Length: 370
Image 1 (spheres, rainbow, N blue to C red):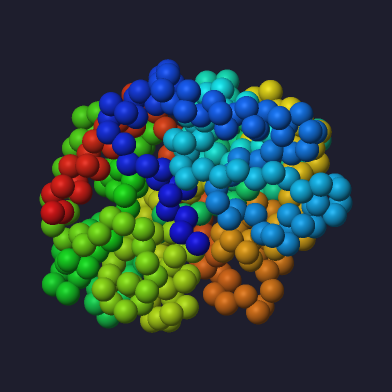
Image 2 (spheres, rainbow, N blue to C red):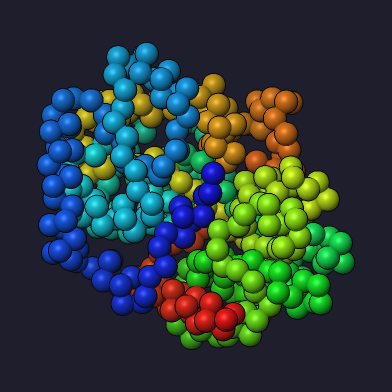
């Protein structure tokens, strides 16, 4: 499955990004109201309404929960965090119980009053990996519980690159070489494209101002002539050599390495990205008890293992790697490789004052690529 829409959402102009973080346009509210009425009727039935990314729960576990609870949750889907944000701020957002926002957007959802605080007493959060808890985007997990997580890393063909990649500087230099130039893939997300240069400068992508973002973006604008695509990565393209150097997540890397075992995956230094998709309870959720029952079921160790094997991204259970069967191919790659250091990972947090700059610079970088 392609995870990139969850990482990046839609590519927006600076003006539209800032408008999104302000008032919901009246036209959007009217357009969404009709579906909201149907959802409200469903909510009164006392079931469970989940608004999620597509294909984000295994059928086996949904059926397992239905046997325990006596009903099947109603699932609706969205294609980006921006879509979820807009929906919850409109009349159509009434009636949802659980939503699955990404770590980059949790703070904005909370600041706009779109989420209920989590009652930690009702869940076994002690079973979860502490590396995924109390992170910068939601201190003390006031509004969110980690569902699964992924990384920004590099997939490459060592024969084409003719060297090992350990840092983002290695990545940029490799992309300039003959045989690699023109076969590079960068993210469609402005912060993922520009972030590596900021990290090389020792800067925090969440606190830098406009001048630093634009300065880092200029290096990427110069580098863009080496880039073939910013589209979601097709593992076959790397396996067959059409792409030999790519920013991507570990699930795409694992798929490509399964096709072509000579390929390599690395999480470069000095920093790279950790993104986390999270369970959250929507504001005024009508079926609160059912929401907590579903969360308790999803946090069961056996369910966490099955969801990990289904998605190809790791769930949040502590010690999860040891529970993955030996029959699962390239299982270490699900977890980003052996000996992953969470202290060298950083999570992006959407800031209304700078998100538009990242998006604008991404547009300029992609234009420079031709």
